Image (cartoon, rainbow, N blue to C red):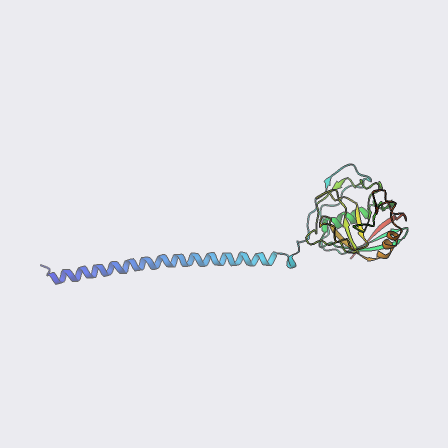
Length: 250
């Protein structure tokens, strides 16, 4: 017969073993959670690293690798549609040859890729050849507007495309930007800013900077407009006729 003391010792051993078993079970659970948490942290760290690796630097949107040009008839001069795949690595310089002299523009291909792609295409098709800059504003905003073969301010190439490069857009002297009839209605018309026009809202895609010939436009502006659209807004009194636009690609 087992004595009372022996039974107590046995019960004590059993209680001790149960405590050991529970502790081992808790330790195993903790280890599982720790491994899972570490795995989650590693996955998150890798994801964050990949994000910062592929994210464009400097806060600029990456150059578009595909452009969408949507049909928008009628075409004042039908030359087809630009290629959907632009050359995102090229640097372009445009020279507008006018009866007043040459205006040279560095095109902002990295910031307004689809706009530049369209402009370069239209120039290659002589779309701008033998056209007049139809609008000059000399009050409130200070721009010369061109790019409509119809010369009415309503003409376009038969397609439209989305706005670009609008964040923080400022229309300082020398800026070249797209004219439009509302959001994402760009076509062929553009304007050249000959004097700071900071009252303009950031609604017009800036796609170039004048590097030579700004004085030509300023001299035209001095002569004023015929005010056909209202005071300080109309056809330039000194006509500006575009013979052609040539593109230099590097």
